[in-house]
Image 1 (spheres, rainbow, N blue to C red):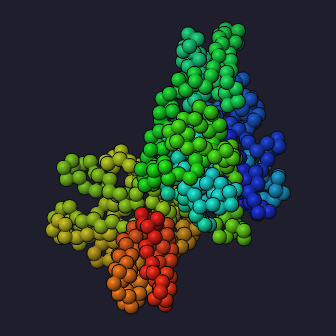
Image 2 (cartoon, rainbow, N blue to C red):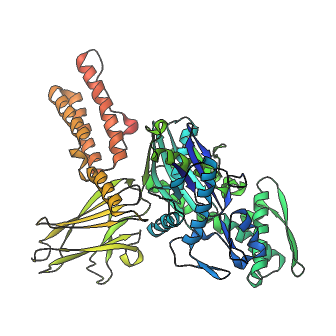
Image 3 (cartoon, one colour):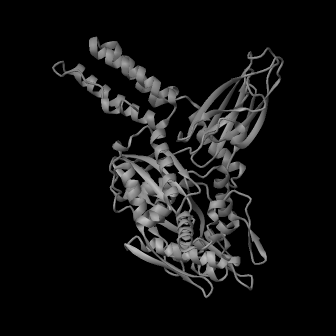
Length: 575
């Protein structure tokens, strides 16, 4: 049975499969790669998905739903005819359609998939995506962030060159911005940011409202049918401006009649607020990633809305960097998801490829607020943009005399106060009664790339409590298997065999060297210990490689006194 990759998009969805050494797009029943993410219920109660449903947006708006991806993980419902759907229900119908098309194309059952999601999707949205897949009859263990999928597709397509890239992914409903480092066989996402309420649909609405404003119409007073008709016209004009200098937007349904000539300059003027909203995620990702725009090798723009010349010009001007020309905006995410599906299936030609991702939101626990009782503070344990998988620990102390238990509440979010973040779960741990601050507990978070979070709390007597949080419908056996795989992460990198061997090698070199070379060995060992204390696998791997090279040169120098002593590799000093 094949494993497929799926790009579940706001506007369109696609599927791909890894076979014959490449990621291959899967056509739908109409022979097209793009399936509109639209669902409609006809008068007989039948469900239509894709292009047939999209054609009913204007004729039957009350029976048709689109852009529901933006509300995944919320309580919003859609009433189509006599039936009521959640966003997960509607997404499952799209996923089911993609699965059936894949089975027809591949000639075999498809029961498992890797699905892409916006990098800035929170836990509730990721869980909703997995529930939608389960409803569609698909097992989804792995969700891949959309920019990560686009990055791995670019890595395969460009021969694996070592580069630092910014992936700007503007789709129909969401914006994701990611910094990606590609070196050797590793594609490493180092920072992500985004806006889950900014996409092509917002530009369509802004164009429609701008048209009404210039033509003296009240957009909000139009009937649902007229509004949808105008938004569809606005979308067509927006897309036409990709290749034309000017287009005419007109509407005439017998009651309302108006026309206006649009240009990219007009679009920029009317959508100014949307362009300004793009800037914040771009600035944040550079700040979090510790990289300046001048260090970028490539600007990769993906997502259907990145076709817009106004968007491309705006981002190129902001970063002083022209986007690469062959980034395949519409299909890059799906092709990357297909590659990830091949990795999941352990395809022989992908075994050496490594994709690391990051935690998009900070995970932490509630900490007692001395100055504002009742408003607990967020205490981060895994910071946003930590490389996954990861395991981090925090130490906390009792706050009252005689305290005999500690409530551990787990939150996700970036706000200072817990009440403004999302509660994920909680556990309670007994502690021996003592004076305030005399008893401590250690709280360890272990988080994997598939969204499995293990929370362990241990008191000073060794009593432990554990909480496992997971998105989707993972069985207890699957969760336990993953936790065993993650157990190695709980071992501090200083204790891992490769790192211990590197430190031992350095200590041997220190013992047999003198003078400046001995000082260099000592300085690098101190630096290496600091890198190990970060417990970040990517930094440690790069530091280990640097140290290994230096020690090779030092040992060669010791074997040939005519050689100059080696110098540290300054270009990698800021790992």
